[in-house]
Length: 142
Image (cartoon, rainbow, N blue to C red; front, side, top):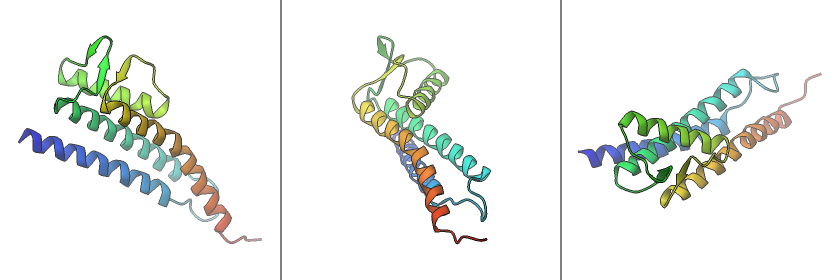
């Protein structure tokens, strides 16, 4: 039962990340406005979903026995609350910056962190590009 639950969490995390990115790309500002509050809220929602999705991915791999994150000199350990705090912190720091070095990815965690960092760099670009393309394609009114 535990393995099935971990697979469900992993698949749900990946689907959430993909759907959030699609939502960002498809979202357009309302007519007559260049930038909307809705766009910023969608961007924040996408960031929160991606951070949570990658955090769940790190946590599920940790519970499966794969060493993905190292804290200090050893593998992450402690209570469930501490592990959730650590993976969410690492996920947020990885997507918003490139990390501080206090929690270090290892093994498959390095590849996952690279993908997350790349998404973190591309999200603002996708936001700007969709807004610019929308504004170029809308009819000009005098």
